[in-house]
Each structure stands twice: as structure tokens, then as C-alpha cells.
Amino acid sequence: MNAYFEYLRQMIIAFFQDVGNWFYNLFAGPWLPVGENFKEYNAYFGHYSPDFGFWGWFFYVFFWLLLIGIIGGIGYLLFILIRKYVHFYKRELDKVKLQEQVEKLNYELYEAIREKDKILELKVGSMGIENPDLSTSDKETIEEVTSRFPKLKYVDHEYKDVDTNIPNADGLSLEELCNTFRLFAASQLHLYYTIDTIRQLFAGMSSSKLIILEGISGTGKTSLAYALGKFFDHDSSICSVQPSWKDRSELVGYYNEFTKKFNETEFLRALYEATYRKDINIIVLDEMNLARIEYYFAEFLSIMEMPNKNEWKIELINSYDDADPSHVVQGKMLIPQNVFFFGTANNDDSTFTISDKVYDRAISLFFDNKGIPFDAEYTEQLHVPFEQIESLFNEAQVQYPVSEKTLDKFEKLDDFVIKKFKIAFGNRILKQLKIFIPTYVACGGTELDGLDFIFTNKILKKFEALNIAFLKEELKQLHTELDKLFGKGTFKMAHSKIDDLIKLS
Image (cartoon, rainbow, N blue to C red; front, side, top):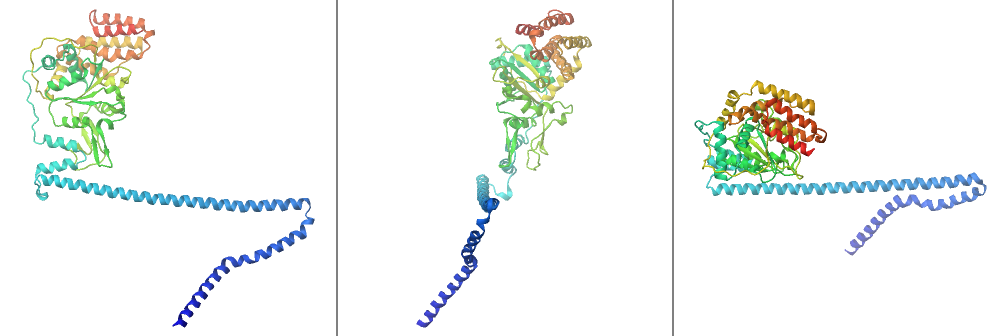
């Protein structure tokens, strides 16, 4: 037995000696003669160097420097390659770590979804529902939770099987409508407006879906829109505009790819709810010029210019889902005709100037003082469908069209403004004029007062952008021209505005 272990020891020693000799001969063996060769190299140098001469020594030094440079270059190249390899390896390592983190997040997301499903099951269970035989109401509740548009789906659920039809109000006229609203605001809300303001309001609603309420703070701008909602027994939806608004996503919302939900705004919910209702719906953009209107409201300004009302569609999402709300078809929603956008605007250093693009498409009412209280008998709300109001607007166009005589005078006024101030008004304003004035007359006003309002708010407002200091005489001539065309004592709003412009000059 001892002999065997001695044999094994000798065999292991011999084996590893042979392996060591093999590596020694492979790596160190070829370099053994180098030491001997250095003596031979030195002998060559000692034999020939005394006869080098100047150029010999020059080339000797030159080639040694060249050799050192080559070796240094090779060394530097190896250093660069090693460094790149290290960086590459580090990047790959970072990718692996990032991939691990992504996998971890995906797992956490998976767990969160599972947790949400468990909560949903608990909610369903708490209702005493068995999954195979869910009732219609319970299915709708689950659809609201899982839908991409939970708020809009809730509106679907809220208005399902609800009769929103409203009977026409007997014997209602636009003049009665104005008087009733004025008395309602005064008697129930203690808000006092002149009858002219109310006439301008309803005449403006007949000619534009966007009404801008301007003026100093505290003059009842927001209150007017609020009171109108109370009057029609459907509260106005008030949406506060923020200075950071840059595009339409701030207004209607956006689709969140991570949550797979549409981030619905109050504006969108109110707009969608209007698709179910038959009455007038008011959406208020409070402090609308805190941001640039033509940025976040641009799509609506363009859509409402389309002559075909069936094309008034906004795209919410570019994909289709069977579970989407009922009135969102192929990702698009039709803007209902019974909705009106009211925007309040303060004119101060904290707000943006409203551009002509917006003014041309809207009707602007200016508030420069508080309402004067007056006695008003108690007046109830008015339940009336939008279709009846729209019918009254259309009837006014037939009953009180703008006279040719007035249009001729207005054309002469247009020529005067172009000649003296280089300002012209296009077909859009003329179209609004032909709708606004008949409605204003039907509300109890006069044709010239309606024309005065349009000229002041559509034309004279543009004068603010001119260099008024050099147009003082022209403004005085405009005073004379108005009296010449329409008679003294008319166009009070325009004369007052011109006087204000002259004072500014």
C-alpha cells in the first residue's frame, strides 16, 4: 500500500513538472537567446560605430527615435483599444442592468394590474354578483372602471334611458326671453344688467358660438354666464384657464400610454354631456386670455368656421375601441349645436392681448361698470329646448332682415374707414352683421343700435392697434361721417369709443 502512494506522489510531481516545462518552453524558451544576442548586438555596434561619421550618427539617432515612436504608438493604440473595450464592456453591463430594471418594472406593473383586477373582483363580489350572470347595470359599472374614458362612460351610464326632451315654451319670443332673463338675474341672483346688454348677449349667441365677456374685474362677467346657466336650469360648467396652456391637450385632455386611459378634463366632460341634452349648455373659459387663445382653442375656432355642422368633429384618439363612449365614434366626437363657449377676459398686464383672429370669430361684450340695482318681480327659471331658441333666431332673420338702405350706408362707412385708416372688414363680419342685427331687433332693439354695436366691437376695436397719435383729425372726421350717414344722436357706442381713442392720442 505504501508503494502505491509513493508511486502516485512521484507520478503527480513528474506530471506537473512536465506541464510546467511545456509552458516554460512555450512562452519563455523562445526568448532565452535574446540575452545572448544582446552581446552580439553590442559587438556589432562597437565594431562599426567609430566609422559612422556625422550622417551615420544622425541616422542612428533618427532610427532609434523612429523605433521608440513606433513602439510608443503601438502601446498607445493598445491603450485606446483596451479603454474602448472597457467602455464597451461597461455599456453592455449597463444595458444588462437597465434590462434587469425594465424587467423588474414590468413585473411590478404586472403585479399592479393583478392587484387592480383583484380589487375589481372584490368590488363585483361586494355587489353580490356572479361573473357569468352580471346584470346590465353592474356590467356598465365595470365598463366605466375599465374604459379608456371613465368619465365619459359615466355620463353614458347617467343618461341611459333618461328622457331629456323638453316641451316648447308657449308664446315665447326673443323680446320676452330677454326681459325674463333680466328679471330672473335681478330677483333671484341680485345681478343687474341693462336690457341692451341682454339683447347684445342673445343676438351674439345667434351669430357666434364664442362669446367673450371683457372688462375690469368685478363687473359681473363670469356672473353673467353663471346666471344664464341658472336661468335655463342647467348650471354652467366653469373651467379655469391656466397660464401654462399651450395646445388643445390642456383643454380636452390626452391619452396616457402608460395607464392606457384618456386624461379627461372638465371641459371635455361638459362638452360630451351636452351631446345628450336638449337644452342650452354653457361652458365658461374663465380668464381665457391668461394663455394665448389661438394656441389652445385654435382647433375649435377652425371647426366652427365649417358651414356643414356635421363636420364639427374633434379627434380625441386615433384608435378605435368597442368599449369607447357611445358618442365617440372612430375616436371622434361631434360638437353639439346646443353648446356655447363663454370666455371671460381681463385687460391687464397679467394677460395676453386677444388677437383679431379670435375677435373676428367671436362676439365681444364689454363691461366697464357695475350694474345699477332696480326693483324686479320674482321670476322663475325657464325650461326651454335649444331647438326652440334656434328657431326664434332663424325666424328673426326672416322677419327683420337688414334693410338695403342700411347696408348701403354701411358700405359707404366701410369705404371711408378703408380710405382714412387702411382697415377693412371681411365677409365674416358682414355675415355676422346680417345675423346679429335681425336677432337684436327681435330682442326689442333697433337696427341702428345693432349696427352701432357691430361697428364698435368689430371695427373700432381694431383701431387700438393703430398709431392713434397721427390719426386725431381722421377720428374727428369719422365723427362727422357717422352723423352724416346715420344722423345725429345715433351710434352712441361708436362716438364714445372714438372720443376715448382721441383722448389716448
